[in-house]
Amino acid sequence: MKSAHLLPHRLLAAIIGISLAAPVLAEKYEIDVRNSGTTATPVEQESPAYPASLEKSGQEGWVRMHFVVAPDGQAIDPLIIDSSGGTGFEDEARKALASWRFTPPESGNEDAHNLVNIRSEVSGSRDSATKSFRREHQRIVLDLVHEKNDEARIKMDELAATGGFNTYESTMLWLMMGRVEGVENNDAGKLECYRRALAVSTRSTLRVENKRGLLEKIFELEDQFGHYTNALQAFRSLTAASGKVEVNEEVAARAAQIQELVDGDENIVAQAAIYNPCNCEAGEPLWYYKPARRTFSFANLSGNVERFEARCENQRVQGPVEAGTEWALAPEWGSCRVFVFGDDGATFEFVEHPAGAEDDAPTAVVDDDVLDQGSSGQRS
Image (tube, rainbow, N blue to C red):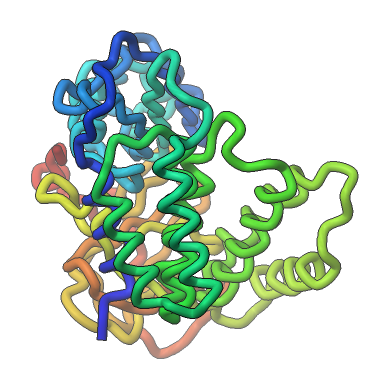
C-alpha cells in the first residue's frame, strides 16, 4: 500500500530538474509577508537570491515559510511548510530570513505566528506553457480519458522529470498530478496537489471559473478529512472569487453545517498525515493546522509521531504527542497554528474539544514554562 504523500513528493523532487533553457538574465522577486495578529512590521527584509544551480533552466518557484519574531525583533526558527519544489529556493529563503529584522513585539514575548510567502519569478518569463509541455500534457489527458491510468502515471512522472518549469507550467503539473492521484484513489495526495496548484497559480494560469472549480474541489476534500478550518477558508476564498456568481447551493449549505459543527459542543476530528514539504534532507517532516478551538488532543497514532509545537501571536509552546492527553491554549495567546513533527508517512487524529469539555482524560494546560527555550533551537 503506497504512502498517501509518496507520489506528490516524487513530483516535488523531480521539479528541481535542470533543462536546456536559455540562461537567466534577470530575476524578479515578490515577497509577501503576513504577520497574523501582531504589530511587528518589517524593518530590514532582504530578498532571497536566485538559486545559482537553477540559472540554466530559468525555473521559477515559491516557498511558504513560518517563522518567529524574537523579543529583539530578529526573525528566527524558520519552518518550510510548503514549496513548489527545489531545495535551492528553500535554502535561499532560509538564508535571507536570518538577516530579517522586525519591530520588537509589543508584548515583550516572542511573536510566533508569522507566515511569509516568497515567490521567485524570472523577468521576461513566458506566461504560458511551451509546445512540448502542452503536447505531453495532452497525452496524459487522453490516457486518463481512455482509463489508461498506469500509462498516465508513467507519462506524468516523465514530464515532471524534465524540470525547468515556469509558474504557469508548475500549476498545470500540480493540477494534472491531482487528477492522476484521484484515479488512483489517493485523496490525500490529490488534496496536497490541488493545494499546491492553487498556491503556485499566478499570472493567467487559472481563469476565474477554473479557480472557482478548484476551490470547490479543495473544499470538498478538506471537509472529507475533517480539516474544517481549512474547508471554511476555502469557502471564503470561493465566495470572494465568485463575485456576482452565486456559490453552489450544496457547497454553501455544507459550509453552514461545518460552521455549526465548529461552534457546537461535540468533538471535531481531523485526519492527519505527517509529510516532508520538500522531500529533501533539509526539510523537516511535519503536519500543521490552524485549530478553531483552544483545547485539543491526539488519537489513533500510527507510526512515529513525536512532538507538537503551538506557535501563537505572543507565545510559543511545545510538548510530546501522547494519545488521550489534552492540551489547552490560553485565549490571551491569540490565534495559533499547531505543528506536529515525526516520521514521514505517520498518521494520527487531531481532536478539537469544545470549550469547557470535561472527561477522564489527563489534561496538560500549556503554561509559559512548558517550552524548553534552550532546546528549541533555530531550525535550518
